[in-house]
Length: 69
Image (cartoon, rainbow, N blue to C red; front, side, top):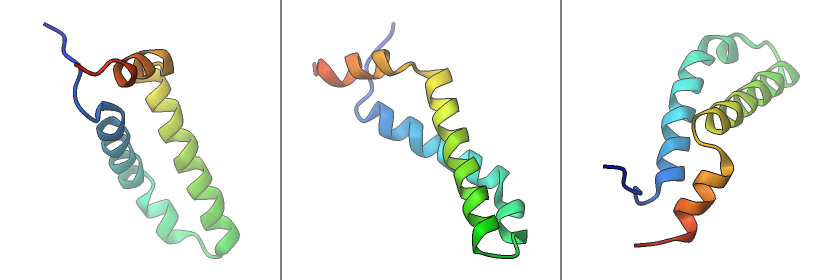
């Protein structure tokens, strides 16, 4: 049985964000200057967005937020 989870998008995003930040932690720590860190942080944001869109398309998340049971 499928069910809509309260705060589903937020919970999914936090789980993915934690995993991606763990993946890029060494690269971020090794960045020698501000611009390199900014580039790594941009890669992190893009990876999070890509994984969210892959796992749960935006229309599915919209429907789960629109209809509250």
